[in-house]
Image 1: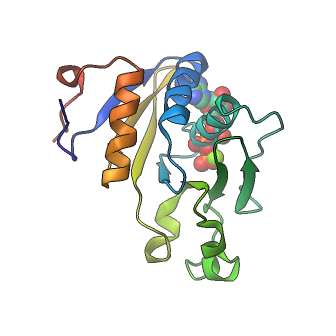
Image 2: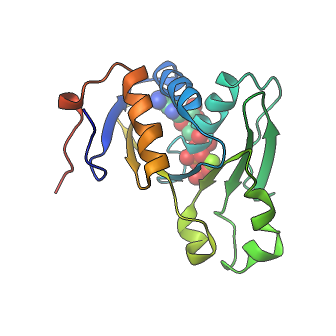
Image 3: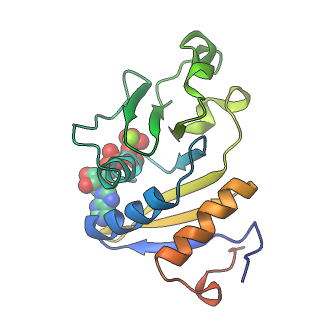
Length: 172
Ligand SMILES: Nc1ncnc2c1ncn2[C@@H]1O[C@H](COP(=O)(O)OP(=O)(O)OP(=O)(O)O)[C@@H](O)[C@H]1O
Ligand SMILES: [Mg+2]
C-alpha cells in the first residue's frame, strides 16, 4: 500500500549495527541524483550513516567527515556520492563559490549535513533524514518530499520488511 507522502518512518537504532542495517537498505534503495538532507544536532550520527551507506555500496576507503572541506566525493559501482557538511559555512552564498552546482551530476547522490546553513542555495531534498539521541542509541526519522524520495522511502520499508501499518504517524 502506498504511503501518504508526509508520513514519516520513525526507527529506533539502538546501536551501530542497527544503523548499518538501515544504511544498507538506504544504499540499495538510493537512486542517482537523489538529494538527501541529514538533520540533527552535533554527534547525532549523520556522518556515521553516510559512512555506513558507502560501506554498503562497497567503497573500500576511508570516509572522512567533510567538516573542514565542506564536501568529499566518492565513487562506487552504482553511483557517485557527494557528501556535504555545511556546519562551517559562513554564509549560504559560499556554496556558489565552491561550485556546488558542479556536484549535482546525473550519477551522483548528494548527502547534505546541516542543510539549514545552505538555505535557498540548495536543491530541494528528495528525502529528509533526522537523527536524535535516545538513551544509548538514536532515533531516525525518514521523510520523503518528492516522488523520487517516495520511491526510495517505499523501497526502504520493503527492504526492512516494515508494513505500512507499522509506520509511525506524524507527531503533533
Ligand atoms: N545508532 C547508534 N547507536 C549508538 N551510537 C551511534 C549510533 N549511530 C551513531 N553513533 C555514534 O554517534 C557518534 C556520531 O558521530 P557523527 O560524526 O556521525 O555525528 P554527526 O551527526 O555527523 O555530527 P556533526 O554534526 O558534528 O557532523 C559516533 O561516535 C557514532 O559511533
Ligand atoms: Mg557529521
